[in-house]
Amino acid sequence: MITVAAALAASGCRRQAPPPPKPAEPTIAYHQLGSWSGRGNLQTESFTSDTGALRVRWETTVQPGDAASPAQGAFKITAHSAISGRPLQEVVDSAGVGSGVGYVQQDPHVFYVVVDSRHVNWKFTVEEAVVY
Image 1 (cartoon, rainbow, N blue to C red):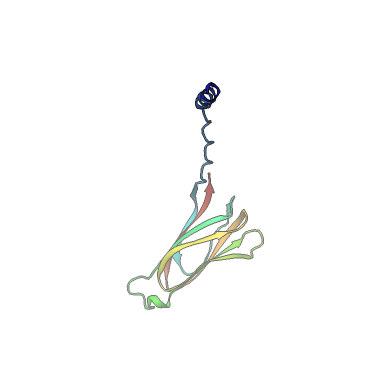
Image 2: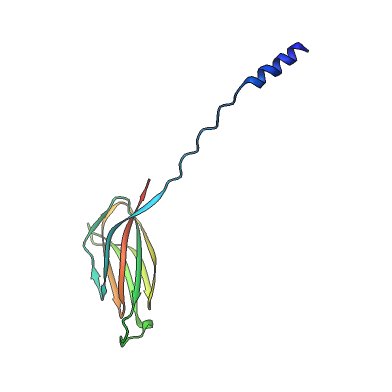
């Protein structure tokens, strides 16, 4: 009886180590690489992405009094390699007016963007994803 009581008392005195902390969830932030606006076609200057992960926020509108209807509008953005010039990824292909977000997922790269548009005013911003 004494040995059982001693065993219970000894086991009650042990403290369990706290569980190890959970690893922090990665957080994604975006920083702006460039912003453009206009009408018609455009090729941007080149810009470097250290991650290759880009977010493109875009919007198209028509000017009041424009002879073309909003449905005739077209807007396309393609990301290109600034090294070889080849197209890497189509980011946006929109008919009419609208807005949205497109994403590019490539290796770290030097990019430029080509805009092909018809009958719309456009603006867009390219941001790079940074994980910390």
